[in-house]
Image 1: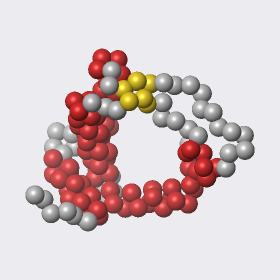
Image 2: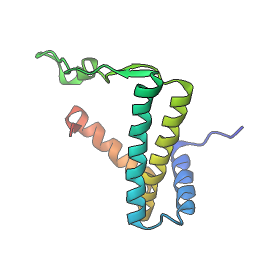
Image 3: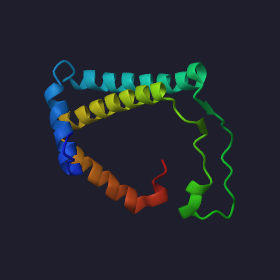
Length: 136
């Protein structure tokens, strides 16, 4: 069994591994296009979980937020519109595509000489500062 790593070391080990695996897709153009392709595949896997497997469904309607709702409690009123739970097969496919997304996003960071740990720390600080005003 693998020994647990502290998060910063895990991120660095992952980024180093991704960087070492970038041979064919080392070009920024290849990496960007592969990233977009993986995002499309994830969308397809989720659509298939709804339309073919049926383990989840989408029950979407307008978000109903009370006029007097406090900004700090908005998360109590908004829904994901997902009903059900991914079956084991669909869950595995979503995990694979999310892993591929992480791979190419990490590759982009490496190609620009950015530390994934630094990117996450910076974004965390921004999220904590802006809070609910981070909505874009």
